[in-house]
Length: 232
Image (cartoon, rainbow, N blue to C red; front, side, top):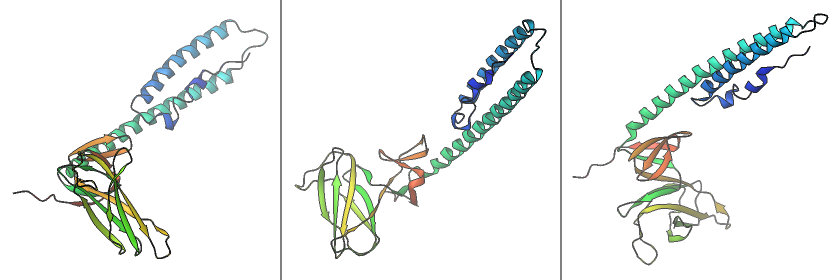
């Protein structure tokens, strides 16, 4: 007489990819307990109704008991791993609080216009013949453009929040776009960065995020930190 393997329903719940959240191991534990109870009931019923002339192979039940033990060990390992991840995440987030109030520079192209200023930086890998800097609003419209530096290397760009007609634009997030050309008319790819004071820290799905007045920057994107000058 063949027996049903009740462990098949736990295959997804105990895989490492699904055991990365704090609730997955607990859910798997509850499922295992229910499945184990069902297994014992099934075993008892099958023993009661087995054919005396063709008794069940006890090796099947022994094999499934071994599988239960293996699943329990896997769930225990996942539970410990979740605790380690939670501790590590808490430590990283706590360490990120040290960025509060400091000015950072991070890879990215979107920054917040606040108090009539938004700071960016860009770098050219080679010397360009022409460089154009455009500022794009949330709707995708170019609200300001100007010529930029053409020499290779890093360059700062601070926008005063005014459009091409000199009108003061509302505070909010604006994206910088740098277009550079070489002597043959080819495109030179410029890297961009945003500069700002860290006003808040929060935990994102992929790690800590620093708020530069509203623009969220992953901590992993930060490559320069400096003290924010005090205003007397």
